[in-house]
Image (cartoon, rainbow, N blue to C red; front, top):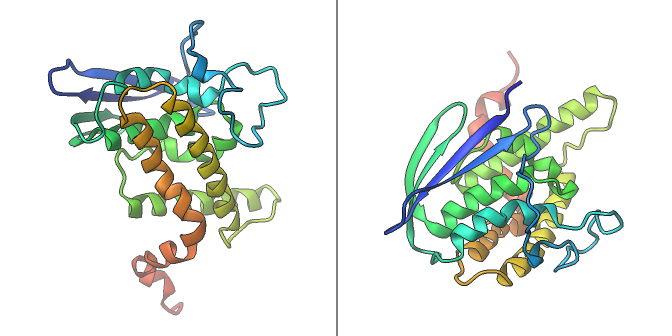
Length: 234
């Protein structure tokens, strides 16, 4: 099977377009990164390490999430958060073109890199990466996240595990994602000259932070879409 490739191209004012090729293993959706022996200090695992990092007791020297973001950070470090970027995203199924504030455009690619990096605490996000939707709205993200989680429960039950239809596990996962986002923002503050990349993390975190406390409310807002499923069986 060929690697799955998603290509982001950013065009900023007075700069040549820059492309980022995200290459994923077709079976595991793990991010493939080139060997890099000159990683910056802020990528070391011990540098602003996440609370209860599962890699802390291993021989891992560098944070896999930080490592995945190095190239993007180099691009974004000179860009203001609200500077417009022309964005083109090519997936195996389609191409999307739009213009967006830098922090939102960078957040879209950052979310993809985070979901597919080697951090074990975010591996649960990989199904969303397979069906990546660039610059998704909050409503789209809620739909995709809950749909993914409930499909995962179907597969858990199929394999003999107990399904979680209450979405309690989804809340827990987003609470953990909030902790990770805050630690990553602290890392990035050590490495940037402007704020686009940190604000991109904060944009991602706004959803992660709110999700555990609003799962029921947010999902309820989508209930109207399923009226055909709620009618009495005929």
